[in-house]
Image (cartoon, rainbow, N blue to C red):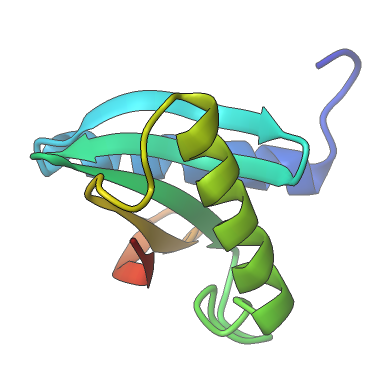
Length: 126
């Protein structure tokens, strides 16, 4: 990316870095990040044992306007499903036989404190 990042982009990058650290602390292997596909973007792809988790990261500075989980609309879920199938097929992974899921990691950045991380596994599952 060229030029300066917007405040929103900086917040997103910070959240994705926190989510990657969270994944590694759980023993997951981070395979890819910021995977761009024609149908959208997957923030993180991790291996959790024999399962692939495609992770959507939602980062906020507060819950004043709702939580990251509450921001997961029907439209966003549909886009996540499309991205998941597109990703799996592009990597020659059969979505009908492979173990995979889509998780949400919602992060609230706390000024001067430890970020709050909420992990919702299986918001979509294969």
